[in-house]
Length: 316
Image (cartoon, rainbow, N blue to C red; front, top):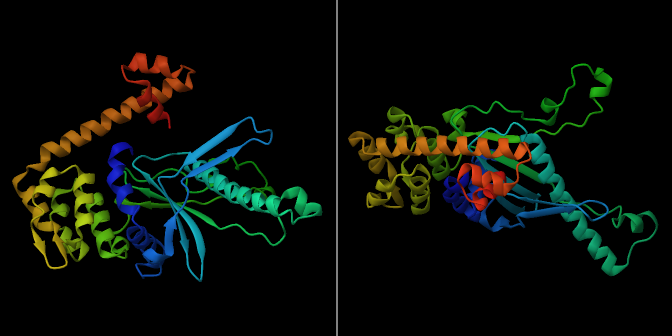
């Protein structure tokens, strides 16, 4: 998502907001998790080959640890604005590295204590050891519907394989919230601030619906951090200028939004955003095409008149 994801990442990096997002996703908005159940987890996930010669690194957009008396989970949220047609593989790879990272930590403790023997010693892992489950959520904010695979089997050529053998091929489903194509009633299950934000993203380019956000969301009174995040994500500085519109308990965002819609001041900004996104997509396509052809980063940067750092950021 590039720079546009930054306000969302900062927003959901707050334990309270991350808990609200999870509660809306899993529990229909019921307050199952609270901020005190959440702590930061290491976003860096690394692994290396058995001989130690090849290293792999992965970074999640968000990675949190949820811990209470009933369930312990690591949950990572991948924020997307384009359809990644290999997403099941990306999620599987990241989740595998997360499990390996946990296993490595367990093995290190056993080696320090020297408390294993036999097969447990050889595997550096005891029969009683357990790892925390990993769930990866994909928060997809693109305009086009998610038409990519939602499970590993959809990426595999299984048509000519006997059914009895298909059952032996492990599958791996993934979890995607397609914001712009999720029914409003489902988005209204999220806590009020999260609901309003998701509806803003969904209807950002629909003037008529955008002007009725208060009706669609049930409320337009949001906290200051939600207000600022929406304004920054939409690229509407006028919203920040108009945030004096406030009521007890929060800010009435719809008043500021309605003013923008009525006088049309945001139309030029919105067109500029669309053009910028399209240009970025075209540039990324050229970078990937040249990289697939084996062209090194320096030559790619030279041909496209961009810096090597920009090439690295796109490929990463």
